[in-house]
Length: 292
Image (cartoon, rainbow, N blue to C red; front, side):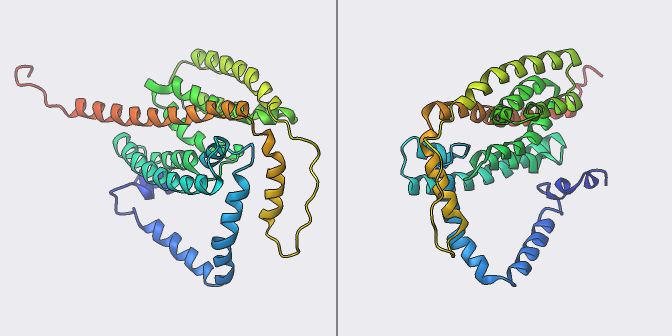
């Protein structure tokens, strides 16, 4: 009963009798709500989503794979299709790895958190604010003593793009969120955690200030006249096209810090699962008769 009381994550543990119940309930709720607005649902899927994807792909502050592909010279339609394939593979891979980590470590929350990590890496649209969705997986890994410090490093590296908040009052507080997780969940010594936190904070200040300087829109933005029935995505597309020249190679390179850190968390997830399996095998290994 204790595991089931951990929250919604426990209901999704692979292999348990609760696996499909919340999914069926969610599907029933979506179907019920959609029955009242079928025309809007079709319009949203057929018109709004494609238009939003095409508009977002040119946004300099996107951390999505399609945006990186477009910046690298891939045609926008092809980049969007490749991004959709990557997203489907990321969701499947995240659920599979999350289920394995949850099963081997006994941590029910690993399934949704690891799946969210993969979903954020492969999502077709990732605004820099949404990178916070990766932090729960980082906090989970911080709680594993053998990998606590590299997990803290990845958490801070993922927080680096939040440096755009340095132009805002109290913006410096956002990157400190991983520190809260480090102090709360890490089994490493407090002094070591403090030393790493201060070091990475200094690195972040050194990185985020020039990161902001990489953003240089060309001239003021002028509103584009649109028909009254135009989608909101059309005005957003006009704005992102104005921003597109600021999407420089240097800005793309700065985002590599985030992507490398996310991949680092994936590697640490695999390590945590294997370490838990090895520890369990050692505990269950029979004692030789000669020792008894």
